[in-house]
Length: 289
Image 1: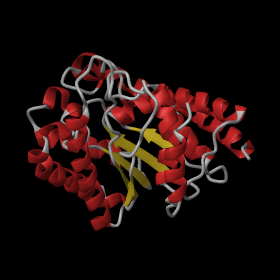
Image 2: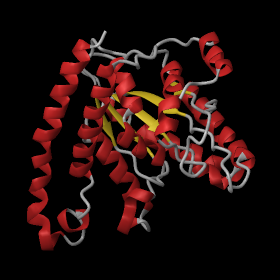
Image 3: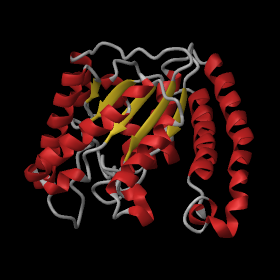
């Protein structure tokens, strides 16, 4: 699961200024399937924690499969009310009081091609404006490229569109003084996706050095402690997911809450499990060298 020598040299030849994480940072990551699936594998989050062993940094993953900057997928029964969908995403993010926000969109929007760029750019600007009250430092991530996979169409035309959206994200980051993390140059030895689009565990693992390099951080992986830390990160993510996205949300807080709404209080019962995992993460982190 190693990057090619040529790619490794490319990363080494283009050092970037390290993104400064601060002790006590609360990182909230929003995005679509790329973000949601990462919590199942934990490679990226664990690497960022391990790369900052002297800092207490917490991560919360609010990824939602199929989502866009307009939060269309989060609307569920409110899909016909775009403003309500958008407000839900913003409220979910602000409620976590982030000091750092990772924003990873553009994959789903890219299927609208060049014609969809203005809509995407306007939506991303609107989303970033909505996050201003937090005062959080923002990192905008480019999409990962699609993989050429057996029995699937040539991804070259789709990747050409992805390149346009990646460039647009970079331009917005530069205009706003936000950090841009370029993942579009990723080239893995496949199969590193399940379907040409969504990375599998190999994909997340082999893309980790690029993610770290894009933030100017060294790769801390390889130790037995790292894998132990990753397993706890995954467990923590599962408990947080159960809290904020219960399968029976419609009955707990939605339009059918008159039936089971009294049980919504049980969501808070996940907190002790999350806190226990966070304590374990801190313990291992402090022992990393």
